[in-house]
Length: 142
Image: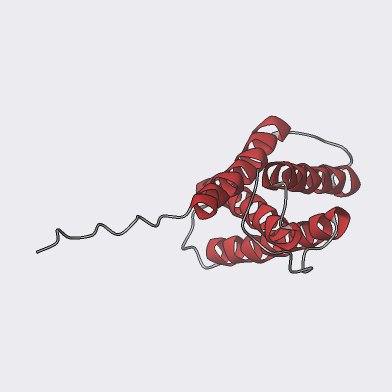
């Protein structure tokens, strides 16, 4: 596919972009988890709502990590977003193995949410490539 963009030289390598996306996703995960914990502590969120909070955290963190990776790498958006989601899921699984002794419960739902977050990042970039500009319609000559 031919594009009209000139190379700027600002794209980073694939591992560096994926690392930046994983760092962004983990940072957002920790911040949102602290926010949910504070909401539960102040009793603005019931204990039954923690699961919904975790779902939002996983979607937003995966989406943000994939977007950061895609913006930094600047090419192969589909592959980059999927790889970023897989890296984030791998980090979550390794944290589960490290802190919870490998007691994997709810991994399927977590994987679906994380991969959906990456898919949303793919879809978010589709509109920007084609643009929403319409050609000007010239009026009739008088």
